[in-house]
Structure formats: C-alpha cells, structure tokens
Image 1: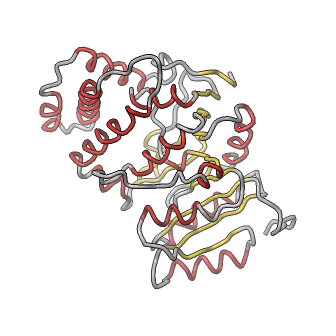
Image 2: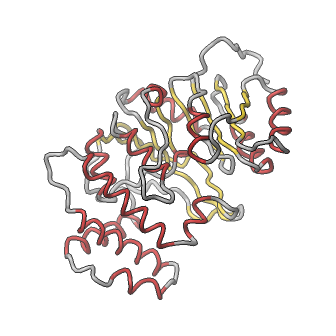
Length: 327
C-alpha cells in the first residue's frame, strides 16, 4: 500500500472501472494501476452483479490491501450505461480516467496524461493512442506516424474532424475527462435508435465543451479475444453501420464552424466506402459490393480514399489542422 496515502486529501486523478462478472480480467487492469508512476490516485470499481458473486469477493480482498482502492456496488438500474454513470459520479479528483476491466494502463500513462492537461487547460478530453492485443498478442500498435507528440483541436474543429472521420477518438479507456463536465450532466446515454456506440456519443458531447488534446503516444493496452460489446457488434456489421450513420446524424447539428461541412448523404456514402475498404482488408468480399453500390458522389470517394491513405500514414495530411503543442 502507498504509505503516504491520505484518505482526506483529494487525489490527483480518479480511475473509474465498471465491471460485471469478470474477476479474472480485473487482475490485469488493477495491476496496471498499481504500477503507475503517479501514486496519489484513487481507483473506484463498481460491481454491477446483483446479488454479489465471485467478483465482489475478489474486490473486497483488493480494497483491504490498498486504501486507494474503493469498491462500490451499483444500486441503480443495471447495465452498461447505468453502471458507467454511477461510477463516474463517485470520482473525487478533478480529472477522471476511465479504465475497462479487460484493458490495462502502461506504467507512465497517468503521468503523461496529467502533464498534458497543463499545456491546454481549456481542453475537456485528453486522448492517447492504444496498442491493441488479440488473445494476448499485439495485433495493431498505436502508431503516431508524422503527428506531433501533443496536438490540440478546439471544440468546433474537433467535432468537424470527427464528422469527416479525420479524427478517430477511440474508446473512453484512451481518454482523460474533466469531472466538472460530469457534474454538469454530461453522462452516458442512449440518444435513440442505437445499439452501441454510446461511449462515442458521450465523448463527442464532452469534446463539445472544451475540445480535445491528442497525446499521440500508445499509453493503453486494449485486449480483444473475449466477449465484449464491441466484438458482438463486429459480428453484426449491419448494426455497426447503422450506429455509425446515427452518430453522423447527431454530430452534424453540433458543428458551428463557418466552413460548411459536407452533406449528411455525402458523409454516409463516405462511411459506406470506408466500411467497404475495411471489409476488403478482412477478405469479407461478399460484403464489399453491396456497400459501394449507390456510392456515386465523387467527394465521398475522395474523402474515403484520403481516410485510407491517412490510416496507412498517420499524421501526414490531416483535413482539419491541429495546433502543435509538443514536437
């Protein structure tokens, strides 16, 4: 246990972890927090299982060993959205770091992210890169490419970049968010007609309050190969496409830029072409032709091809310029 721990002092960062019936995975996530170079953190784990089971028994042992670990049981409605909102509401620090029970922080993650907050104090979200693992093996490293170490996009530029697919914000575990925005009521929600992507919608609404800092370093290990909401959606590509289109519909009215963003129909065609490129890569050939059929707008093709080029060469030619804060 951290010998300097003061239960009455505000921690520098609150790490929040919703969980449900996965005690074996939690061990890796908690170990990654214990190995952080920043030590004045609090880790809040919210168990959504009712009645309590093996997970709660394991959490009780954890909390007894380290007073910085606070365990709670979600008393609200159960499920992904209520449990995330409940654990966010338990945070005491000014900055909140979401951490899923199947992922892990690299040792310097908290320190690097907290230092980044000093460079642009108006930012509401700090987002880092992630190394993606499949069954314990590195499948897709988080590549900085030609991008600067730290970049800033003010709110409207960031929303426009997300709309154009010029900025892929990732998942909440890659982000650090402000508690004041959570207290203001920016919580997880289902805006209607969506099966997933509630986390992306939440991040968009946070970004709208202060913009985003892009910390272009892989500071997170994301692990795949077990049952998650994301893997379930990947097995249902039509539902995933439907949610992407819905996000674009929600995002466009939020953009107040003087530059007119492309029409929703053009963006939808761009999205279909992007999905076709990914499915061609994954050799799902039968799904490619139905996606590109009817995509006749040249602007959509140009944006999709530019997206594919930028995926191969990150940071080379962003559509929306970034403010470079670190080289």
